[in-house]
Length: 223
Image (cartoon, rainbow, N blue to C red; front, top):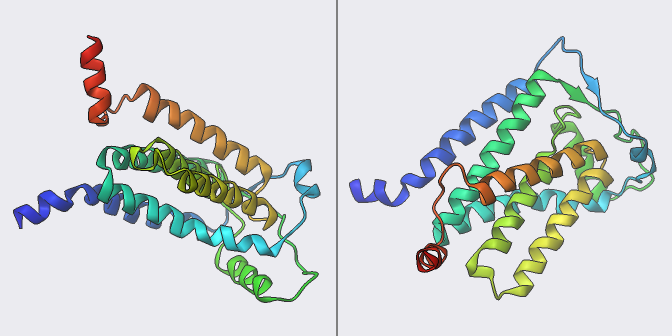
């Protein structure tokens, strides 16, 4: 049991945060008698609805799950950084949504086409309310995982993997707007939050997260 705990103890904070996040988000989604702030920018009206973006939108779940799982197994230092960035940004989202209940009216009520993708979008609309929007977690988490991929030594020479990650990240970000799941405002605030957390987690590193051994040795050599 002790060996098992030592091997997998790093996943405990992830599990605890996951439970807290799901419960908190559930309570936010099911609030009643709440005055919502409407999120809207003029540019939102010029972005057309495109049901085909449901593909990258749903791939987000696998992308984030893969990122956490891969770095947990292959690169613990990057895993800690990724978790720190994800946990902090998602907590900021929960706090903002709690203090400033928000929503939008961007979703279409009729659709020009009738295909499998439209049906999936309708299912998405039915299962996910158009509330609690910014900063966009789809945007924020996609950026966080892509940062981890591009910083990891494991992908340093795997250009196809790095480019694929970047393309998927951009596709996911675009999908939030073309599916009318988010306003441009949500996307921009997600990007700003990600940039700020990148500076804290990766550059200044106040959490004293573990650094790669080769970087530590290079620092000792310079000293």
